[in-house]
Image (cartoon, rainbow, N blue to C red; front, side, top):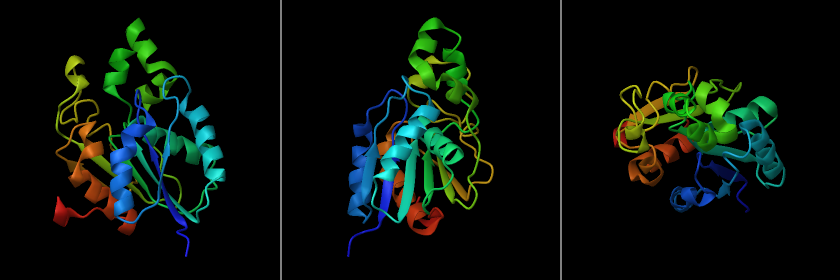
Length: 211
């Protein structure tokens, strides 16, 4: 019998879709069918990338579609549901997504180089997107291991994952949230984070017995 459940994986800013390969391969070993969605993170706005994602979903043979988004990828997922709310059932896991906006992005936006680096994602990262689609279970994973490029950006609230503060990842109305000792990038390669992603996709809650 063909598996009618799929998990769509979305990377963050400045990253290729391949960055989600490790997470995807481990999810597949856990029994999930994964699809990596690669998108132009700085050349197109989240609204434009949500349209690209919607077009991909229209080709996807699945009755249940889960989403896992890292950083900016989580904002693209929320924009998808805002622009195209009629989606198939499924759960969503956010990894280090700045739902409340990013202090790091606001600091970068003060310089010409920073504005160039943020590109079309600038507004979304500065201000965030803090919505929970009706009837949708969302799990939020934040990191508190402050290692990463954020060291070069003063004033990121603590605790943080080296780029996104735990407070910035908050999403009022989310079904569950958890903070792990991982950095912004290492959460994509963390067995601990992987276990929590699997737990939420399967049960709609995180497994605090296996931190």
